[in-house]
Image: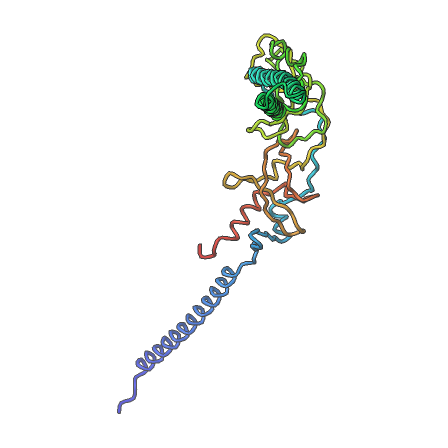
Length: 354
């Protein structure tokens, strides 16, 4: 056999080197791919198992953030201040038509007349029955039938008087139920106040306070604004027996002197000078977030935990925000970063694959 030439040996050596390098490259590639997959698996596991920030307990979402998260988001909380004392309250007044008072007065006078008529008839039949008894006992100067007729007339008149009195009492009760004790008594007694109202020298005004206001003693006078220049002085009569169904607050009766522009059915804005302690807490605007048309705040239950609570922003505060009831005493509320808390709450509830 002929020995390989030098050039052939060099070619063979180069081929071996190339094959070795290729094997090493393949081995390195497999190693790199395996490491990348491991890293990806670790990253996927960390994403699929993020720190739990929202826990639902008894239907309430509890949001927990680290101190660093709170600082980075600029979230600050503060204890809410109590609603301040007020020295006046705005009521809503309506000038009432005196016609229902006139109708009730007429009904009561008719019922009184029925009682008077029944009383007079009973007096006559009672006297006739007494005479018939005397005559019957005195040697039967009248017949038994005549005595029985006199007795029957007397008893019928007794029943008629009782019915008339019951009707009068029913009308009086209706008056007091509709207009209250003071005004009802004035109507029943035909007092000068009633005559002034029916003559329209004065008008009856029903003043209703906001539902959140409860004053133990309404002021004796109040001011109602008739127009931009005219203030009408109202004088207190009594607590009203009913309230305005749309306003749902306590109502009172006042009177107003008749004057130009003041007519039944007119609505007036009324200011009552009362010193009251308001119920509730002042929630600043910065603490309120809106979701689906509802107002919410975040209450801090511990240094890292917040819960979202719905509020009713019905009463505006004097400077900023709202006066809110139904909150726990000394509530610690997020006054800065509340919107960030809302975003974080919902972001934490989004599934990872989404």
